[in-house]
View 1 (cartoon, rainbow, N blue to C red):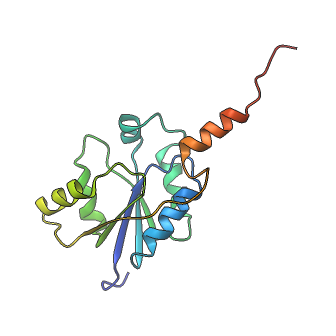
View 2: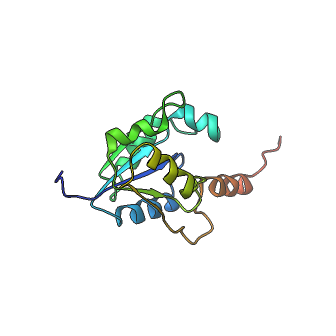
Length: 151
């Protein structure tokens, strides 16, 4: 990779890959030249959200296969310092999804405290649509599942 390229980092679970994820990563890629996606470690997903539907290695492989993604890596487990990943990725920009709970101001403060004063933090726009999130997809599947009675 050319050292002059603008490096963008995006983060997420990417449990059931969907159009909202693709939209997020397309927007993240538009912020620079090289997009590295940090896929949440299984233990992090368990701690912060739910039991992962798909394992982290599988999620990472799927994400890396998406056109806007130049590289995908699995993030640190919860016991490791979350910001350690920055030394590996070396981003110029961190792209946040529209629905990610990270507060830009607190993230900016933490980055500044760690000496990453030149890293920009940008929140991208969401995708308009009714199936733009994993929880919405699961709800739709459950809604359409037919109850199976005993014949």
